[in-house]
Image (tube, rainbow, N blue to C red; front, side, top):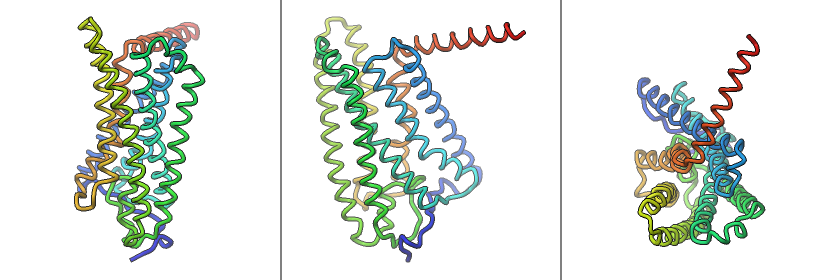
Length: 318
């Protein structure tokens, strides 16, 4: 038995016991991480450098990519380092920082996805009012509200979680510091307040999810009225992947944080954690941006411009 004052570090979940499987996990996560970094960095660069993309939709996409870069960088590098060096330890302050950053970035992303659904609803269902409802100032305010709400939400949960007395050791059954796994280490009944906060938070997120569903419901109704079959197909091919990613993100997050202890198992917990913390940041650039022709054109111009400048520099120096 130990208490939180005597704990200086936590032990994270080891993916495998054999060295070969540890290295396989390292290379697998490295590939996912590099793909997420490249995809999101390309979106940020394309939107920031092309003034034609300085519109509400792409402004929100830029914010989404920044949040994805932060969230996947909070968990995956530490997991890769632990597998590479055969180490499970993370310091107490490092664990608290990981909890804060992950909750902050993921909750802010969820609020932003709600805003993005509203943006698409206005663009498709009320195009004549788009400039009025989503002006530059309104977009900045909505993005700032998403970031700000995520920050306050993370402060609340981190403070509640790490103020609990821990009496069940320091082994966290997850590859990163996750609130439900830390609650398992708390003294009996001490976690009830934080669990209550999680339930209230789930109600808030459910309201956001219902808002997203209503927005897409109105979008689908408007799309079905489009006379062109090609236009309907294009709209559905854009909206359905967005809704699928949001549904995966929300469902796995709620399972991770609200499932009863009787449903908990190491393999299920690990799968759910990967689905809500690793998969969305890697898939979002592909689904939200790389299938977009304007993003592709912006990246093509950017790469062509960089190549031309590089060739000019080489010829001038020679």
